[in-house]
Length: 277
Image (cartoon, rainbow, N blue to C red):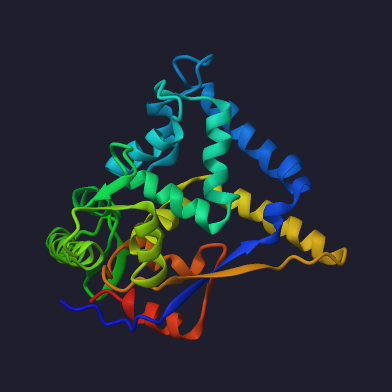
């Protein structure tokens, strides 16, 4: 297998101006995430301490080790509970932060032992739990969707091919290194390939139930600002297009995710890249 994307293909991401809007933060985003916390903590076994792991994993519905890692990076105090400060802080990283903060969140999810480095095995474990897209009778479906005929064999083949691509990705980004730090990780996302970051961010933003309402509130608020003559633009930043692991389901959702602008070159490649082979 060979990666076929030219190294100058980029994805453009926008840090919205609304990130610096204190009124939206105070009157919309903060109350929304606090309300979600209140709903979830009601199901916890210790409401004084916060949301327990089972409750958060059930809510997020993230696959396997990814759900475990998400809880770990949310639980800053290592108390086995997520309090309201940690909850709001963590969800702001996903929805209400700049690109650099989002990339750091993804790095932290790979950094199992929190030593400031991620290893080849860290990346393999995480990406192996990211859902893939399967090819069944010429149709494209997400992994986990039941099909009566052909599903098991096709799923096995697709997953086997994806494991080979994950190994190629690891080889491409690590080379002879056994581990990489955050600065190296950031440079890889910018200049080499962005699968490691985009697969996690898009998975979070498509899986978490609060995404639909948050982006509806955000879009409505931006519309309100626009109608009142306020500039609702943002700062455009670039990452390298993903170019190696073609069946990761979240990447196939990329064009639908809020805050992503695809330039024509990257869009053309992603259409080809996300097509199940």
